[in-house]
Every structure is written in structure tokens, then in C-alpha cells.
Image (cartoon, rainbow, N blue to C red; front, side, top):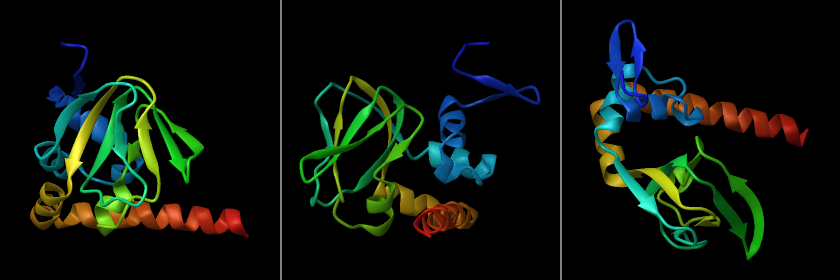
Length: 149
């Protein structure tokens, strides 16, 4: 079996589905929902220094980082480095709001790009996915609230 697939009860799992299943935002999603989402995303390779989002600009997609790292800055100050396996741009994609930070490829990167329009079509097709995402976002909010107390 190729190294980019895994066996699940005797069946091969699509590599995109496997990667999406590992993203915290989609952790509560079932395999069928992830398969539908995987069908709507594109794979993208970017060079070091490529800007994924610019603070204040409208963003229309989110990215799952397959390999490489991204640097996040707010008002010109670096605030985080995002490793492979994480997602960037999900809040802006979900809310259709301007990017709250600038995100630049710190290294060459392989990304799964989730365009907003296709994402909303998937949510229409698979309502349970929206519920799973809402659950994960609520967990994030609860964790942030706990840290602030």
C-alpha cells in the first residue's frame, strides 16, 4: 500500500480525508463529511515568502498546512509560527471578514486550499459538518475563556 494512504477496516482512506481528519476544526466530523469536503479542496504548493493572507484584506479561503511552516504577524510583529497539520484562515473564511493577521510561508509549503464558495456548498450538502465545526469552535471559545479567568 502506498505510504500516503492508510488502511481503515480493510479499505484505503483518501490522503486528503486522512489529513482533514487530523485538523482540530474537523475532529468531530464523520468520514462521509470529510470525504465530501476533500472533494471540494485543492492542493497547492507555494514558495518561501509567499503571502497567504494580508492583514485587513478580505480572504476567501482557508489552508490546511500539509508540509512547511507559516509565520503569522499582526501590525508587523511576528506573533506565531504555524506548523504542518494546522489550519490558517478558517475564521475569516467562515465569517467572510478581513484577515486579522498577515500569514506568510516561512518555508516552501504544501497546502490544502479550501475555497469559501465550495466550502459553503459542502455545508449545504452535509449539514452535520457545520454542526461538527460549530462544536469545535465552541470548544476553542471555552478554552480561551478558561485561560482568561
